[in-house]
Length: 368
Image (cartoon, rainbow, N blue to C red; front, side, top):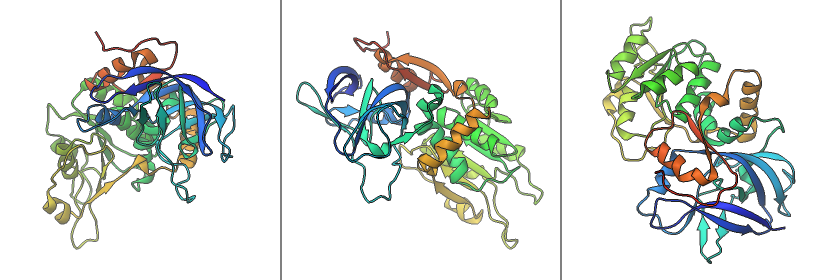
């Protein structure tokens, strides 16, 4: 079986994507061919697009929803016609077979590679470990962001901290991942939920996801603001948990400082600061604050999610009306506008999550 597809390819030496007409080969033994319904545009892809050391053509994207067209001879988890989500976290990492990154031969003979999977195109050919079977009635907006934004943000609250009802959570960065973390904290019963950003528009949107307070870090000291909002009966102040969803190195010691300290001799440990966003540069922390406050600095990759288990939870949240994916998806683009989507995200014009719906696209170019 061969499929004609349009794939967004990032050539070497440029930050502009090009749409390539490609005939996809039959899937390999462990591969799945997915026809895309919609896919998300994640901030982490900007790191690859603007990486000056990048060599060779690349395939991008790692969250989407679509239907299976064909499967390889060794695939038994899904079959043709199944609706699936694509994600960059392997579904079964302990099965003894590491998933293989996607590679695609282009018409000019060059081979484009991916970091793990790819979703920016009308179709994707990926290792079957990167697909998760979904109900047929899954909302397309939910499906397009569940494989990264929702998994990473809400998953960190579910899996990377031990949140108890009434405890306080501060979230640095009210973009797509941060908004999902805020929603997860609200759904799981946090008391005070503080959104920290430099955009009032994003802070206003955060309130719709459950943030009880917004702190504009450009206008006020976020550490002092959070301490004022989170007094504790034992005399300490600070959030029980901070989640840094920005990946900005200078933010990390600040979010750590905003975590409540422990009390020596009383058996009360300090709070936890969780790195959710990918640090893009080396950073320094106040080691005395970490040690003397008996605080914890932790990492969370993909929200610590088990995709099969946790995606089902996110679907339930949506079905029960506790999470509205249409509120998170603030910007829609066609496939031939993929560079416009990247430009909007790069320059901070996307309040929540940008989603692309593949359609008829003959060309792709820079935003005028």
